[in-house]
Length: 365
Figure 1 (cartoon, rainbow, N blue to C red):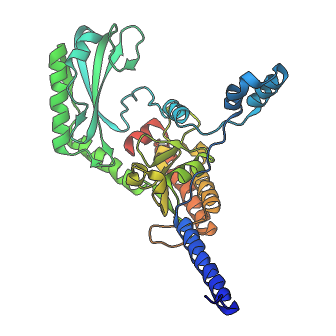
Figure 2 (cartoon, rainbow, N blue to C red):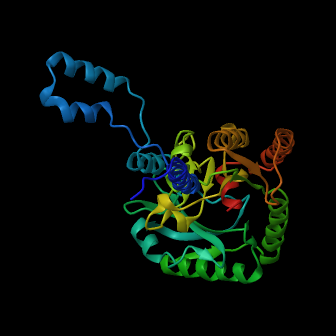
């Protein structure tokens, strides 16, 4: 058998190199098409100390403890949810207010216990689409409060909200309010005094007209330029800016600085992707940053923080900021929106419906 010629050997080598190149390119292309992944969590100093504690000298252990005390906190879902619960926990039930509620006073012949009042409460706290509430005048403090067991009351008042984002209180809803208030009054032996329906409906329309013309819910969309993102990558990137996990998969929030206030910003991506069997293999190309202007205190500077978060995320995640029509949002456009919002804040303040206030949050809900 004759030996292979030099040409045959060269062709075989070249063929092998080409085949290896094709395989390598295929692997590179496949890897490139995968969504960006979150950086694996590095074991904490505490964990390292626990794992190697039996092999450490006392001086080494003390050094690890000192480092642990200086370590920056890492994002942890359980602690984040705990922080979210504290920062966004609902404040105590807001009181009725003649500015945004139709009110009916319930006159009593004698003091009524909180237990009796609670037993007489209607089964639902709404009249149509509007919140319905009852307050008692505490015989001990002289303050209006939501009825409580162990307290005694010398009078009551029932109220229904004049307007919210579903529209103005209408005559049907007002009639339902009258029936609920009358039933409550009958159960405690009181006599209700109702305002004129047409007057209250007219007030409701005026309030709704103002609220509809001064509502603002803003959003920015971040779109991936090249490589898509995994849910974990999005969560890790947002957590670096202070966002924590929301109550719904695919939702995160930037908590308010004051307990009981609404979150400053929301961040959302595909819920189905977050709930996928293997979410880290799910490719996300867009996420949404949102701001519900009337729900957040002006002092939080929510729009400025929204712009900062959008710019930081776009830079860190290789994305662009676009509007609902897919157009790029430039810094000068952000400045114009900010100027308009400052005027809106002034108008809300002048109507005693300041953004983030109890009354403001009730009307714009």
